[in-house]
Length: 181
Ligand SMILES: Cc1cc2nc3c(=O)[nH]c(=O)nc-3n(C[C@H](O)[C@H](O)[C@H](O)COP(=O)(O)O)c2cc1C
Image 1 (tube, rainbow, N blue to C red):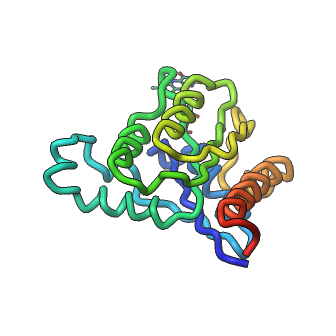
Image 2 (cartoon, protein in one colour):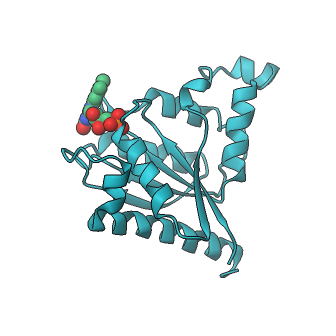
Image 3 (cartoon, protein in one colour):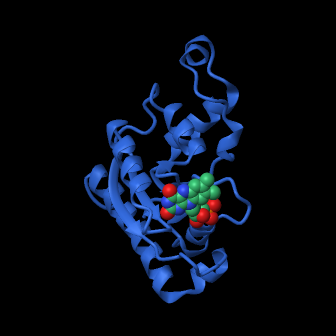
């Protein structure tokens, strides 16, 4: 049984973000062979600029790429803003395009607001064109429920959905490695 390191990425900067709460519930629900951790908040990254990328990669971008590179799998949950992916998330993904860290990496894309489908579709397309393996897309019906991370983890239906997300990621990392370790 090898440890699976999952990187959780929230597209919302809000303190009481539903997307971040969903990801924090994953930390609670992770089985013993899985760790779920967050990178630094995405607003610690500068705006993407390929001149800066070519001159010298900022320290925060190096750390971000390293976090992605060290992960065995990734889970993303992001709000939709005016039918688009949140600016901070798209900016963070743009900083990965010039690297190799996300290539072939299994990614699960959660949608905490299933009626918001335009940004979700765009995010999946962006991830695919960047070379990530989107192995799972899960709609989590959180709208109007005002649950924090412990409330989400304690809800049997939501907990089962999130456990299935981790299990799918585990399966895809094992498949990529040629079988269970
Ligand atoms: C500027 C702005 C634009 C939004 N645009 C949309 C939208 O196009 N579609 C939608 O379903 N929700 C939209 N919403 C609602 C957010 O997606 C929703 O509040 C979401 O739960 C916020 O996520 P968070 O709790 O993780 O911060 C918008 C909210 C804001 C503040």
